[in-house]
Image (cartoon, rainbow, N blue to C red; front, side):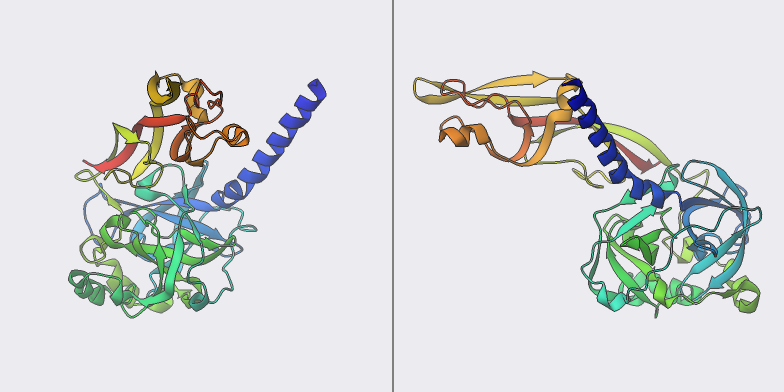
Length: 380
């Protein structure tokens, strides 16, 4: 028995390792970039936070609008280790992309690779993005995302009329650029993040409407990128450096002393058909975590041929890991052919709590309310 337990634990550890390894391997190539002392402003407190990623054997790729004309550019990896100062060596002005080179030695022998997928043929496919939304310290992976059909749109067709003039003046990205129409939230701070298909980069996160909250966002397809030395793009590069991205390019993540994100919490009751694990829930956006704090279950019992309900309320964390959301059934009751007192369907339920005796009903499996603590970012 003891040997079987050891084998079982070993299998669980192995499965957990296999499950986590791809995410951990990918996150190690994603970096948090900080850009300061930018040419478009004389405010010393202005700081741009954005995302970049290591392109194997090349350098660090990011969104040009967050680093253009900035004197001090630094990066740190997913573990918080500083990678030192960076310099812009190559750019693609039309597609708003920059290649950064570290001023100190870092390992570029491994990293992401650009995908060979043809952008026009990836419509409807699931993609993943890893980025530092709102400047958080740890990269977050967005897995519930896909490329819309058709996959390519002109940038001018993705933006509001009031932003067309600003982008026309800036010319980076060019409003005539073809972009990937992605169904995800590219929040401020995710500019420059890798958009991955089968582990390779198909696009570079660039921006979206209303700070990405609407999921109407776009990425630059890597197939369109042509990098040239920064010096070869003069005087256009220097002219671009003097244009404030916050006034013309609404997708930049600029933090300063007058406008910053703070972490707040709220407590909400979810009914049995609501699951609060998405990026937006009950009107709350920029959710960082959702924590269960209590729940109420119902117990159906058979009394004088009629079904009656009793209730069970708990704040005991030992039960929280057994709370699940989705379709559920009671196989034990089905096997007995019992219908009265059987609670099954969709929504919240408590695994392992169901019983199926003719007089005991179905235990406390039917969860009718879940209280959660939601932590979220908001501007202050």
